[in-house]
Image (cartoon, rainbow, N blue to C red; front, top):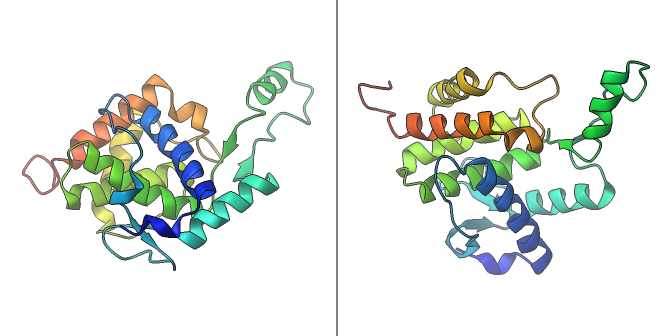
Length: 199
């Protein structure tokens, strides 16, 4: 809506995040190419406004974390152990990060909303889907809707893909077939909100 607030670095970074979502939501459908022209971009944080906004301060915080290497919580499990299995797991995940901060949650709730709209969900269903997705990925909730439906969608995901591991999911895990199926079920259930099949 006001994509002129985003500089080129911000657009590139949002494009990378969109591609992560595209891969994770692949079983639910194709969300297509990034199109920030349709998004609500704000100069200040607006965590309650509708549709969900991508705020410049949140995107700047994401870029700062990328640049500093503090993007979320780095995986450190197994580095201090002599157990060969834990060492192998730590080595395989050394390039991965867990995203556990409010800035990622704010941006991911908005990206989840816009992705859900591309999947064909109505606005009220997409709002719940975006909030649930942000919570699953970051552990931080957003409150664009009644939390009751958000909790139900999170539960539907957990029925299929299991609970997030201690410390949260890694993007590599979210791209797994079981998590993709979990997101597909979430999208299907979100479309039923308000009907007798999902109250």
